[in-house]
Length: 450
Picture (cartoon, rainbow, N blue to C red):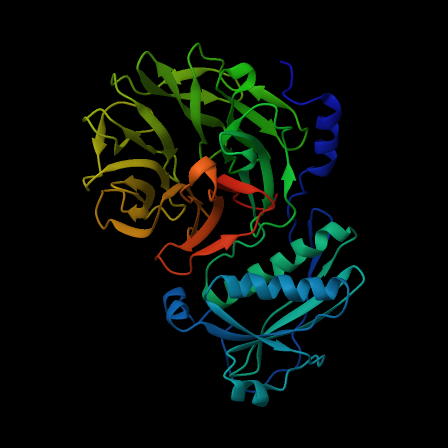
């Protein structure tokens, strides 16, 4: 199958996006970054647990004051800034800057500032050390050293430090060392160029993956491998393609006679579920990635689309107008009967199951666009945010934060139109924008920065 991009471009992308190695234990190697635990320094006589004592709900109401040091110049300055931004941007931490280079903090002074935790550390060349302390007891909670060789690993190390702090303070996994696939839009609104792109979760290190010759939409990260499924209008025929981030190559995924769209990986990454047009409607199919075999899951005679697996892979939520208006339904992953779960006013679209299993995010259209969540049985519906257009929700790996596309209305000739990616806590607070170099839409959050 001929690639959408040239072989030369594919080779360049292969070198730029080669996947990192798997974590080893003890002293760990994470894609060339060596991770080494540090022994505890002398501590106060107070007894203090090393586990988190502060819940996320409490931190949302009272952000945790935490001291972040100046890790030094050069790489150290980058690490200081990235860790500070990671923690501040959650809305759960209040970072206090420190210029102290002391290996053991002055706990009395930090207590007086109201700090609950203190980080100490420094960076020199390709090595950074950090320690996390409980200010109230003087207990070292964490000590880790990272060694790296590439300058491109500096931000990644900083995100790893931020993830450790987040987990040790709040008791749940961090999400800073992750990426997003998205659609980068340039040109006129009436005739845009839309490219498949990838970036770090905070908008840094953005890279274009396709050349813009063909329109692309709805990128979806694999949960277990360096692959992205997306829809592309190659030769003006919309079909689902698979992009391999290791090789830079792309191929058609399930060459159906109709239009294929709205892809989503299974939790084990072995298959992709998608919609395929059939006359005036569309059905849901699943394609096995190893064999290429296709299996039809719905045949309602309606428009069945936007399928998404439950985290355990046993069920699929999707939207359908089989009842006359687009609503959300759940069925077994093997197909068969489906039951409706949405009953609010308007239409429902774009359902995405949370990694925590507890809620399903959706877009509701009723005189405007709203982003909300509900339990898998349809109860507890909550609207998180509204806008002229809000769409394409995607969860971070721990289910705490949603990213989505936010678009503004256009004036005469398309003036004033904007399309950007925002994030919001699943409880509806701390809505923020991700800065990108172009207009952006269709975000898909990776499970890790593999």
